[in-house]
Amino acid sequence: MFIAMDRPKHTGQRRTVAPAFTPTEMKRMETEIRKRTEEVLDDLPWGEKFDWVDKVSIELTTGMLAILFGFPWEDRRLLTYWSDWAGDVELSVAEDLTEQRRQILFEMGAYFTQLWNDRVDAEPTPDLISMMIHSEHMRDMDPMEFMGNLVLLIVGGNDTTRNTMSGVAYGLGQFPEERAKLQQNPDLIPNTVQEIIRWQTPLAHMRRTALEDHDLFGHQIKKGDKVVMWYISANRDEEVFPEADKIKVDRENARRHLAFGYGIHRCVGARLAELQIRILLEEMHKRRMQVNPTGKNRRVHACFVHGFRELEVELTKY
Image (tube, rainbow, N blue to C red; front, side, top):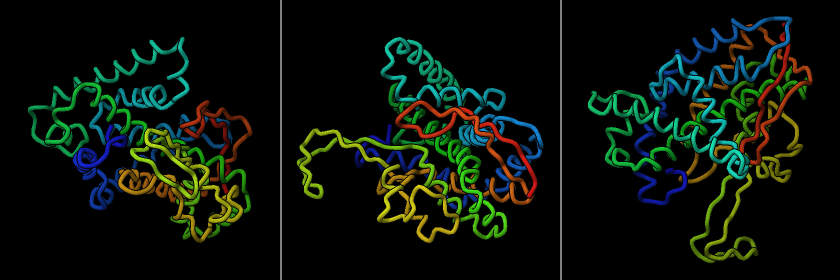
C-alpha cells in the first residue's frame, strides 16, 4: 500500500487518489454530506437509549466511503465489515482466526475486482476505483498491491472518522463544562473538530523501518530497526498541550495535533474527515441535540485502532 512506500512510487500512487480530496471536491461534496447528516440525525430516537456507533458513526462514514468508491449503496455495510477485519491488528496474530481473516479479505478483493472489471472500459468518473484504473501508476497493480491499497483507503476512510464521531459523543459527555461552552458558542465548532481529533487520535500509531543508522535525540537507531511512532502519545504531550487528557474546545493550539501523521505520508483524506465532523457538530447544534452517554460502551480491542464498537447514548435538548 502506498502509505508503506517511498518516493518515487509513493508519489505517483498518492497523486492518483489525491484529486478526490481537493478543496474543490470538498466544496462539491459538502451539500451531499450535510444532507445525509441531516437525514441520519433526524432519524434518531429522542428519550430512548440507542447505539451511537451503529446509528451515527458507522452510518455516516460508511455512506461516505460508498460514495468515494462508487460502491453499491445496498452493500455499503460490507465496507465497515471489511474495515473491522482489516484494521484490527490483533486478529492478525490470533492463529485460530487467521484463515477466516484471510478468506474475508480475499472476498473483499474479489468484490472490488468485479467493480474494477465492470469499469475498466468505461469513461473516467470521479470515484477512487476509476481514478486507479485511469492512472499509469496504479492501473497495473498486482492483486496483493490492489488489496493493500483497498485496505488503506477503507480503514483510513472508515475507522478514523467513525471513531472520531464516536469520540464527539463520548468525549463531550466526559467534559460537560466544555460541552456547555460549545453549545453556547457554535463559533468554536471548527476548533472543537481539531481538539476532538487530537483527544481521540483514532489511529494510535504507525510503524516504519529504518533504512540507515541514525541518532534520534541520543537514541541509537540501527538500519533495519522497527520504529513505532505513537501519535496518541504525541497528542497527549503535556509540554505541547497543557492538561492534555482533557478536551478543551477553545484550546489555542489544537491544530498542532499529529493524528493525521506528518510529512509526505500525512493523511490524504484529512480535509474530508474534518468536513464530516464539522458538519456533524453543526447539525447537532441546529437541533440543540445533546448526546448523553449512559456509561455502557465497548471499546475496539486493538492497539492500532483507538475507538468504540458500541456506545449507548440518550438524546436530550439543551
